[in-house]
Image (cartoon, rainbow, N blue to C red; front, top):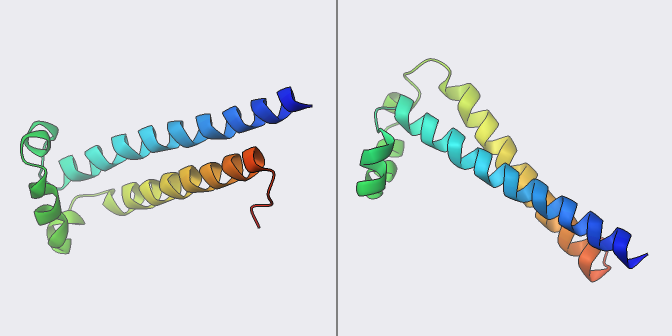
Length: 95
């Protein structure tokens, strides 16, 4: 029985890790479409906050709302998978 529990925990943690990686990729594409390419974001991470502060610039490119929704869903999926995996690991109900 413990092997099944361990497998379920690893499964949910894997889902969380994949969702976080996907969210990072979507965020990089989101900022690139807003006018901040990845090399500039890596060299000057504070520029990401400056770009995100101007909503007209951020959402001016086509498809930005879709990217933002996908980013939010991936973050929610990662959080939910972490909560469920940790609750299974500790043998507590997540609800």
